[in-house]
Length: 320
Image (cartoon, rainbow, N blue to C red; front, side):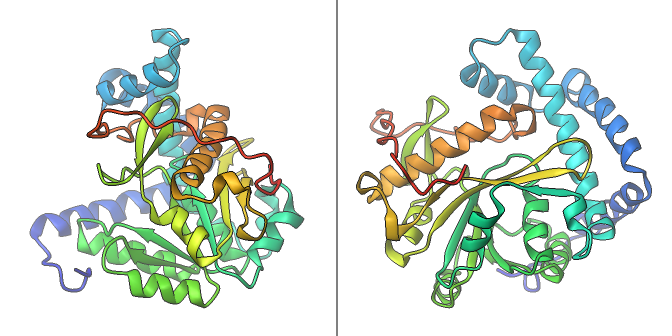
């Protein structure tokens, strides 16, 4: 159901106006203030309110068993600080980053190789995770003139959903809902478009189960199928903060090109395991910028079997 057809309730208006006021206030603050305020927010969320404390520490204890409880709590604070600063960056990016100055804010790793795939005539799939400022990554793609189609679930609040969609589409990012958009997705692929999505979304028990950071995780099979059946190169990308607010590094940590794909990756499970391994590599580099309150590991496979890691690719097109 689209935002136009969903019923609008009184609480939706309250949430919408509150969000617009908060965003307006954040746009008024200097980024240096936002950074300092983010440190306070991290302390409040992690130590005072302890928001999603059990989920965060369960995730961190499984991924980083070698860290002490204090070290994991420091990561908890750093994550909340990052999330607050990420919101500030999203609010201020359209006013500060434009097609004439984006190079002052962004460092692109392996520019020539990545640009070649961005301009490829074939359809492409850009896979990321809840790491760094993934919203800014898609915004920057639009700034440099490459439109993207993101597959995402509509927000529960139709007013906020419509407002955020209009903001994204004004920068060249078009949203395709997770359900009921198969025809539109096929149209984009047939036209050689670029589809972006988050690869660390839980797909339920019927998903493709692979190992992610030492635990079984369910992934959507369509991500690998886009590459295997539509001849769409898969780019595992990231956008992390380096050197202060709005200063980011954008890179590609792996490319699976159907024209030069390792035979060991020519099935859904192996390719799904491959891109999860690539995501894990970059998340472990920047753990303070990952969404540890994200319930990535919601359940276990019904058969109780943890999927083994797929074979490590010898060369899935050098990109790191």
